[in-house]
Each structure stands twice: as C-alpha cells, then as structure tokens.
Length: 325
Image (cartoon, rainbow, N blue to C red; front, side, top):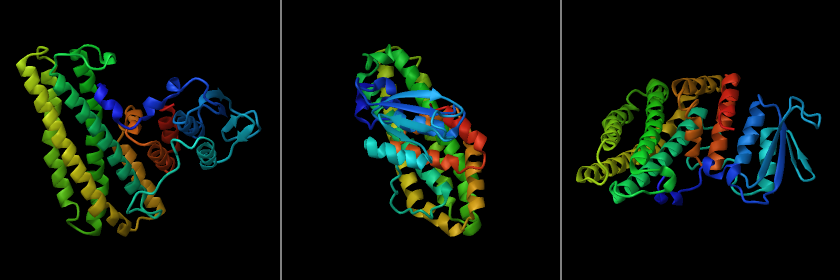
C-alpha cells in the first residue's frame, strides 16, 4: 500500500511475530494443532509484543487438556478467557478483552454484535481504499509509491485485488442483512427495514462502478491525461462510497439494530441465526476471514472469534480458526 496508509491503526498483519523487536519476551504455547482453543490463543498472541514458540502436542506437557502458556516461571492454562486475562495483565498493550460498544449491553442478541463488528471492519477497509486511491490520484500514475507495490501498473493490480476482496465482504454482508436481519425485524413490525433495503440497492451501482473503473485504469498508459482523469474519478467515487457506508451503518446501528432485542429471540434461536449468518457469508468466513479480521482492532477481533465459538457448528469454527494462525 502507499505510504499514505501507514498512519492507520495497526492491523493484525502489521503486528505479526516477524515484525517484533529483538529481545521480546519468549512465550511458549503447548496445545493440539486441531484445537479451536489452541488456535484462538495462538491468534491472540500475534497481537502481543512477544516471541512465540508453539509446540504442537495432543497432551500438553503439564497434564492439562486445554492449551498451556509458559512465560518465564509462569504456567497458565484454563479457559480461553482466563488466558486472555493473563495475557492482558502481563502484556497490557494492545488490550484483547472486549470493551462494550455504546448503546449495547450483555443482553444484545449475538447477531447484532456480529453485524456491528462487520460494520467496523468494512469501514476500516473502505477508509484504507480511499487513502490508497487518494495516493494513486495524487501521483497520477506517473511515479511509484511504496517500493513493495512494484511498478504503477503492478500497484493498480494489487489495488484491484484488495477492492475485489472488500467488495465480496460487502456484498455478502448486505445479503446476510437482507436474508436474516431484516426479515426478523419485518416479522416484528412490518416496514421497519424498508429504508435500509433501499440504501442497499442505491449503493450497488457505485460499488460495481468502482470495480469497472479499476479495470479501465489497468489498461491506460502510465502518465497519460486519461489515466490522471480516471484515477481522480476513482478517488471521488470511493469517497462517495465511504460517505454512504458511514451514513448507512450509523443509521442501522442507531435506528434498527437496537430493535432486535425486542424480537425476543431465545438462546437457541440466536445460535441458529448466527449459524445462518456464517452460511450466507461463506467467503468472509473462509478465504477472506484473515482479510476481514485485519479491519478490526485487537479486542474487536477477539470478540468476533468469541461469537464464532457460540455457533453450533464446532467443526466449522475450528476450521476458521486454523485459517488465521
């Protein structure tokens, strides 16, 4: 990505172990490679300023079935929450334990938490694309940005790949709301989700237009007036999408999602609709799962993994966790 993006908050990929400074505290993790709990803790440790040594074992060396953390003379096991408390106490930054989002409480339905966190990730990725698009437009295709991006044409291809990933997440999120969230609200009070559905339809041409703009830019000559104009138009369209996302998500979180609590879903119904959410958003929760999590702050990413553990398909949860470590 261009240099202009480096002021953004650090994502998961930016604080992986390979980037840790020399002399970081050594932490050893013992646990089954097929265990969701082991993968969960391995992922959590990616955020901490430690040098991680993972030792796969079906029976950890300390006679305990759950994963085991060893740091100096400390040996810690138990529930994943217990282990997160330990990690946050030992290495406070960044914090991994959940912080309550304004307007919502412990009784908020699981699906609402999932939607809110999906909004957070999409907004981060859209902001990232806007900054990157601005950088491309400023350079006008005449000069290189970050050397890791390669030539201007190579950078445009990478830009297109990132946008395609974001577009898939956004389309799946919209489909999930239309097939799961809005029908629940409509059953409770007819007409509640009409405006939200209309906004989904409004933004689709913009989203597809950006995809076509990127394709066109990829075949224009570097430094040409046509390329400069196309990059400017792309940047403008991305900013429009960003503004629409901000308005739409804030409206949903302020007006619609709080009403989900009034639907009075039972624990079993909440788990069922969460499973349906994962079913509809297959790409987001498989090959794009790591990309999706990069858009969340560390404590948000851990909160999303907590939601995944509440689904009834434990095999799917384990498979998802293995993808990110």
